[in-house]
Image (cartoon, rainbow, N blue to C red; front, side, top):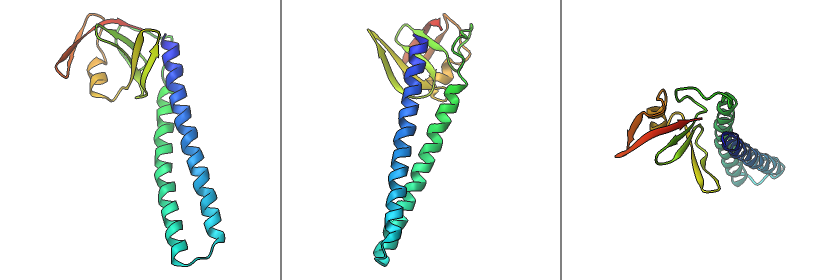
Length: 147
């Protein structure tokens, strides 16, 4: 199941990167089109807005690529005694994959929450062992299994 969750996270990041790159491409095409148009102040305002949007998308692309690099550091075969980045954690309440925030992965009757290692819950899990308990948002999570 860990391989499936990892694949889900990879697909999430790849889709995000592709979507941002497509938006950047469309903006660059619009900028090129604007360059050929000489409508004065209206032209300059349009170009400035497109440039701002391009910068914003550039930052989003950087963040998405950072997620991809984080995923590439995950070692799937490793399932140690303690929770680390890349661990699939089964608790009495839910399953958590600690790597990146990618939402819910559903397989059959099982829901796995893909969470960033920087989230407060993941921070509580890191370094814990099977049988340990973590309290988060008034709810106790007993760690059943680390995969």
